[in-house]
Image (tube, rainbow, N blue to C red; front, side, top):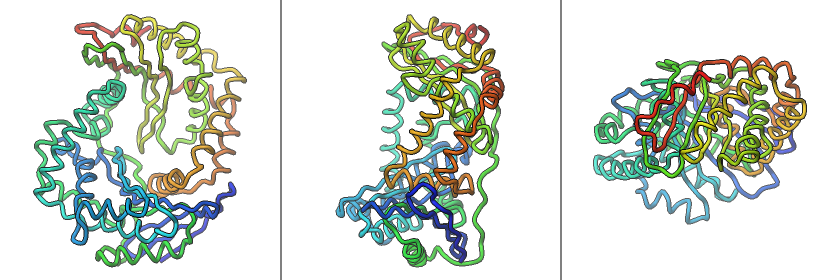
Length: 436
């Protein structure tokens, strides 16, 4: 068992890391001023690890793990946490899955015990699989009713094609109906191992006590021991086939939804801080260039923003707008004009100052609770293999130069465009929007 310590550097406390026998990693951040703790169990497996015929298996498994273990049924799992005033939930992403709980500091043992039981000892019975299959189909239907969500999914599908990164996390109606209990159980046994898992805890905690509680919970499940080492952070993935094109989904909606964008940076690219400052200035808030041009000056849309997302070996930069169907041509032309303008001219010093300020404030204000701190150190360990303090991140943001912003802007925004549109546009050709 090895333990390392990192200075919090921002007044919150100390981040400590211990690797238990069997490769299970435990990271904690001390926040002595609070009375709560957040516990997360992060498994380095997500939807991009699925075969095409098993789309949605990771998310399906996330649901099933709350259905029962040898020591608790579904009601007892939720009641154990809710009965002490806590909350328990989970989410699936393309490259990892997280199970988490937030409780009073005095109930830390309960949260660790329940989450460890769920992650290590799920029964995955045939009856539970069939019952939850219907729930997931309802979730897919609910997701499909929100075009502002679906358009991002369609953008990824067009950008990456029929590859693991381009496929929906929830799967499809066909894939969920087809996946078997045996396939899900095999997936669970193969990947839900201590070597793939990080336990992150933030709040009013003592690191040594957390390690002892986690070790005891995993030992009870027979899931600890051996000399295996933690799996290294993902640096690549299967089948990223980047494309440029247009995808239009015809729906008789009152509002059109569009995403115009291109590939971005990987999550470990050193230029990500420069791109983040640019994104904040370009489309990150009400004072951003996109919002001002599209909504404030012309009144063409209610919602307009830009965003970045990053994976191990690829990323996205996109512009989202929701507007009246009759306004979409004008909106697309403005998006093109602003993209071409920043490639040619860059952004102003005033915009850079504003972008840095927005990034700094968003980072610090977003870490005011134990849940966000838990998430930050968990992902730091699982996907970055490093723990940057808040002060270190703030310093990297402040160190970004206008020249770095101009260079990364020319690189990323100069890449081939992809467009996804949802709206009442049957047989409408939007190919022109890629070549303005």
